[in-house]
Length: 227
Length: 227
DNA sequence: CGACTCCTTGACAGCGTTCAACAGTAGTGG
DNA sequence: CCACTACTGTTGAACGCTGTCAAGGAGTCG
Image (cartoon, rainbow over all chains, first blue to last red; front, side):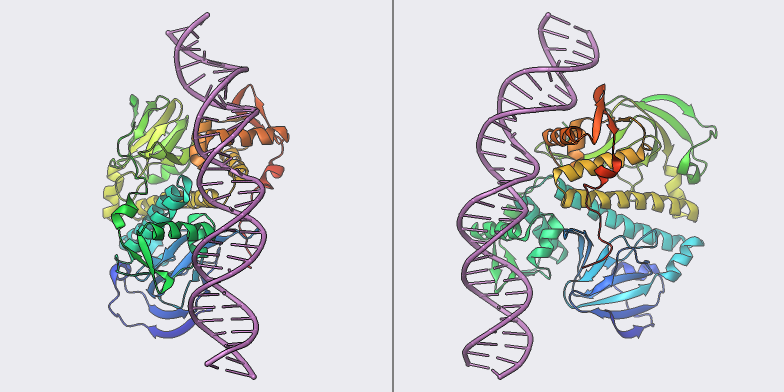
């Protein structure tokens, strides 16, 4: 359950694209790890930007299988839906602080003539689309090692290629993101560790990438030249 | 290569959503089976609606693997990109007739204040997003039989549940759409045929579904109740 | 007719899942 | 401080689904 911490109705400096969405009213919310931010089919009334922590969007199936659509890291904006309802559930992975914007006013402006607001929502949806399309390629035609490589490189890039990559999510989450089992994720990481491409620091969620180029060699790139 | 057949600059009755995009100039184009409609990374200057035939959007990898992102059937609109370049290649599967709209003017209007045009593009992108998200669930955590079921039900629905489903695409295309091999696709169809859930008419691309509900039982649905 | 493409079917191997055991870590309470 | 529990992650072993390789049938076209 969300813990309303405080209102933030003054125009504080809002990083990245959020400021472009106009003078909305912002609040800060905190979620404990595992808490639901919003559920599938719930009305999409808010936009979220992560201040600290991490969020996963996923879909649960009745037989226990689960597919994670995306991980959201600090700075990421999520919750943008065109239709008005969420199609995935969003859950905090660890204790997480987000800034929340009421989207109600935003959407009202779409119906009117606020071209800037419409374009901003469209860009957010398009960015989501691009990520899902890349994710599609990941799930469709890659073996387990390639999937883990792609995951590592994606997180590494989005964290700004830090010396030590601290994963907020566990092996189960990685597995459900990549469409494989947590055992195979673990085994794949062990393979790269044995090959000295990466190593663990203290815990098995802190990873040091020793050779990003060698890692990147193991995934196949799209072919610009059609055959 | 596209074969320009004729111009169609008069305001003919345009079916479905295309008319909402405003009074653009439409042309009719024909493509032979296998012909490229547009390529990856090419500028997205046109919108397409299929009159007859079928188109696949796909991405080719350098090692021969291929992922098909979507099949487009008569009535479908495709080619809507937010960024201005295509992220997938589009190819005619069979001899195909499309209506083409110059998107140039459309995009120019986005920069101005045409809220209707912006919303229409946004809806097209959102529909694409919804399809890709469903596709993601298909590729991530389903076995071969479930994948083929989902494919059959999707095509059946989009063709309007005809008595005889005529597939424009071959087994290889289905396989690359579902992230499996054509042999496994063939085997899965044979399983359903042996179970009398479907049968073939004349050719192996004409399929009769005898029991859609029994088919639907074999795929797992998203769980509305989180456990 | 021959060459070709597309599809089916069989045999087999391999990759990844499943099941299981165990280790490492954190939290809790005596 | 330690014992106990719960959780997470690693590793092993065996199974099974699906990919791979191969052969052959069915349809098409010159």
